[in-house]
Length: 253
Ligand code: NAP
Ligand code: 2V4
Picture 1 (spheres, helix red, strand yellow):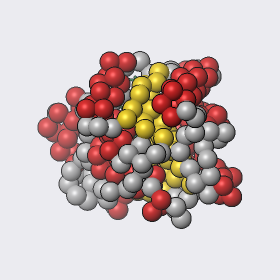
Picture 2 (picture 1 turned 90 degrees about the horizontal axis):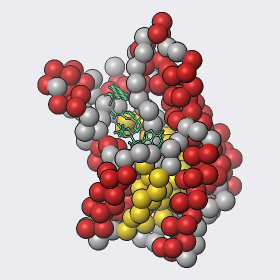
Picture 3 (picture 1 turned 30 degrees about the vertical axis):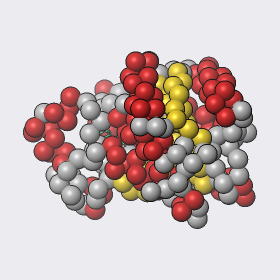
Picture 4 (picture 1 turned 30 degrees about the horizontal axis):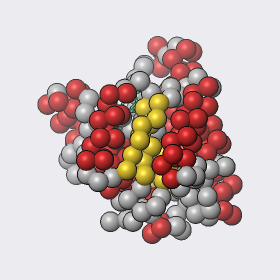
């Protein structure tokens, strides 16, 4: 079990799904976790309450990512609450998890939808990282949640995959940029992961998604969270700029 005692972490999009599991996992390892959400205040507060009930430390922070001012809102709330809890605004671990998913056949993609997907999935993480840099100490961690879909063709996913491809470029270039400070920057790429959506309760859909993985199952979010917790730990100090395939062998072909 990685030890993250005395560390602070921000997990974007932690009100449910993979982000919730990451927040819970980091808190269980001892970190004080900022549970970010966009609109689901009650869900985020439930995540915070669950972490506290287990003896962990967490607080919720709201910001709609996409519009430029979202980053200001996020850091105003984050810094104030970090100060309140720790007396400092130091942020050791940043997990860029919040993301929009969605499909559109190539013939049906609209400019408006494309811009929104790019704004939330790629532009927001770039500016969140830029803003976090003054808060992240040497030996800090940045983890970007991408998708296995950047590694195989699925035409209706082209927009989503483009946004994740852009996110992966952030990993590559910031890993070099921050290396001297021993801040690691890595990509975690899940495959189909049961995020609680109704989709995963349709037996035929679940079975079809399961068969894509070498293990014959869709992932539980906790499996992704364990990978993130490892990358956040000191054991992963020599891994930077990596693409960590966390798709349960979906990409093996
Ligand atoms: P999810 O269940 O849909 O949850 C998304 C989270 O992101 C929610 O907490 C949501 O908060 C937040 N969010 C979304 N748009 C936002 C915005 N504009 N501003 C602020 N917050 C926003 O997602 P998930 O399935 O757990 O996926 C998490 C990440 O893993 C995503 O980046 C996704 O691309 C990636 N991923 C997922 C899968 C999968 O199969 N599930 C596979 C590969 C990669 P609010 O509801 O409060 O807005
Ligand atoms: O199939 C995916 C997949 C999925 C889905 O399961 C549907 C969902 C949860 O609405 C959105 C979604 C996002 C993804 O990034 C993936 C995904 O990465 C994936 C899937 C199937 C096989 C390999 C994958 O990398």
